[in-house]
Structure formats: structure tokens, C-alpha cells
Image (cartoon, rainbow over all chains, first blue to last red; front, side, top):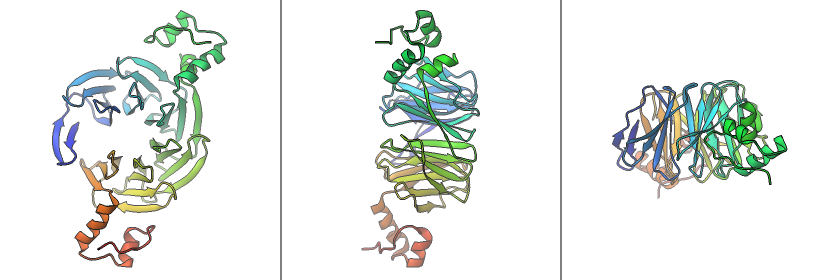
Length: 169
Length: 169
């Protein structure tokens, strides 16, 4: 991973840490963090100014082909060769969700809409899946689906990293 | 687990139309258009709200590996496996230019600088090429290189979709 001075066309730094070929790279919206995806099944978060490693996010299930920060910088979406998309909390470095059932072949690219409410995932299965990532919509959907709040057990099983709360009004 | 994922991040739509595996996806800066690139040698532009196809841009020369909208949303840059980069008018869906001579292997990724004046194209030839996409600079560059205006034949060959004009002052 090489950082270049765009104006001078000189090399600023070479970031070494992945153990396999890289597939994608993205800056966080505030420019402070650089995320890299590799066939070593990890995403590495780097301090963009100091060029040091901040965190290693392990996908376990397959190579990480693609990544994108949400426009607010809070979420990192990663496309995986096992056909899933994993969402990470970009601040706490915890896994928020695994999106399954949308793609039937490896995910090759991911992109957030500018308002952050939609995630598009493009796959080798020739299709694009659009996901709703609007928290308000999600909250409403839990109520619509279950017609009640989740129990604490259901919540813990579904979203182990998120503190429990009621979602129906 | 699946129920949870579906509940928390609902699937909005699956966009079907490409006849080969997808390689990249991007939203336009205003969020209204979704562009997808495929090994079927096409770019498809979709209405992001209605999930309908707006246009199919045919690359002819090779698989489309990557795409990026310019920050003003007017131009769509696409990396092609024939080593070229094709620029499209994102509004009229016409081909603006084919950038050749920068890469000697398939182009794998393209990105505009935030000011839109530079396009970076990464290639399997192990290099990144920086292109000046500032129209004023391009005009000057034609004069600097040729020390004269392009002939109408030269113009048509280089930029078939653009109306001819003199560029030297």
C-alpha cells in the first residue's frame, strides 16, 4: 500500500501489514482513516497521517473484495467472497451486521448512496442488491415484522455489540 | 440470523439486467443514478429511486472493471480491460473521450480527485496514471503538444462525440 503526494507525484509512505494481495482501499470521509481490504480475509484500518495500524477487522468467511465508508463515517461496509456483506462500526471496530440472502456469488463492489440510507452491493451473480441502511426505517421494520419489541435475548443474538433498547413507539 | 439481518437491513431491490458478472458500482453525487460495470462490456445506469434502467453504455472493447462519477456528476469514467479509460457524458450518455497510452495492462480502478481536475487510473501494469481532466488544461495541452489546432479529422478521431472547435488562442 503506497501513499503518494498527488501534487509532487512523489511517494509519501508504503503501508505494510497485510499478508495477502489487496483488493480495495478507501479514505474515511474526514480523511483521518484509511481502510484496506485484502485476500488475507482482513480489513486493516490505518491512521492516514501517522501511517500506523489502528485495527485489523477479521472477516473469517472469505476474501474482502471491496469496502466503502458511509457518508457519516460511522459504518464501514465490506464485500466478501462468501456472498455476504459485513457492516462494521468504524469507531469501535465491532461487527454490526452480516447481510445475507442478497447475492448468490461473491460480492465485488459496495457503495453507499450520498444520504447514507442505501447500500448497493454488486455481485458476480450479475445483479445489484439495494439494502436499506436507514436506522429509522430499520426500527420501524422490526416493529412491523414482529409486531412487538425484541426481547433482550433476541436483541443480544441479533446485535450483540449494540446496547438493548425498545424500538416500537 | 437471517431473520435478524433481514429485519435490521432490509433488502430494497435486486436490479437485474447485466448479462455477466459485475465488477463495480457507484452512485452519482446527487444520489439519483446508480451506475454498474460488468464483464458483459456494458455500463448500466439505473434510476436509484425507481430501480429502472435509464441507459446502457456499451464499451465494445473489453470488460468494464471500474467506474467513478466526477464530483460534479457530469462525467462518468470507466476503466476497461483493453488498457483504456472511457469518459462518458453522464447526462446525454454519449462517449466523450477514450484515454489511451497511459496503461499497458487492463485498468482495474479509477478515481477522481475531490476537485474533479485529476483522474487516477490504476492498472494491472503495476502503475497508476494521473490524467488532467480540467477542460481548460486540456485545451491548452492540445496547443502545447501540437503547436497548432487539431484538424477536424484529428478532432473527430480523438473526440467523436464533441463538436469541433479551435482550441488555440
